[in-house]
Image 1 (cartoon, one colour):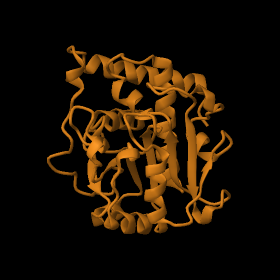
Image 2 (cartoon, one colour):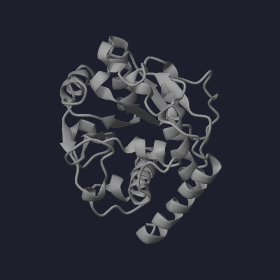
Image 3 (tube, one colour):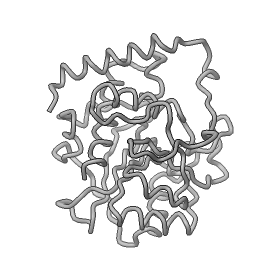
Image 4 (cartoon, rainbow, N blue to C red):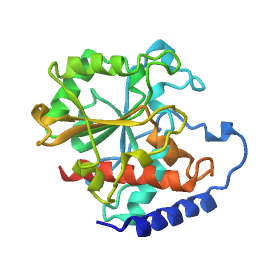
Length: 263
């Protein structure tokens, strides 16, 4: 495992380089990005970050009229891939990230999927079937930027739970503590109390869906609830969040990806 003080310094250095490479040009409008790529990078065996697009509920367009699944795209994942490239041997595509719907058969080429804002996810029957197959085949899903039911009228956990019941009727999400291996895949994370809130109140909650609902088996879905880890990735090059908090968010992102690639 990497020493936490040394690693934090490395992440800080890379984040500082990002700031230098992309100077802030003023105004939050500068953070706006397209909602999907003109085309996805062709599969070539290298790790490619895959964001899930989905049919969005009518009230899920509250941020600049963009669908909820696109928030932070593509800045969040590109910044995370820069960190992964700098600190690990994964050698991912960095500025080429993909957006796929669950009913696209190409999802089965990729071991890790990333889905955000599930409170506004209007799951289709095709989504449910494809996600069930993806999980059963050993895929790993990261769910992030997950607000409570008080946030902008969303249904919070209830919407997600209803969707997942259609995927796996017996699905049980179990609260994770710091002893779980996902918190020790690359960085040793010794406390879950250190994870910052971007703008939510209360303590972030980390939950997992395990194969056969058995915590001794593989984690197939990792959920960061009542928090938005990706916003720290998105804003790390803008200086809008403290560096120390951003480092912790990057550590969790790297750990999640490494877990998905190795389990």
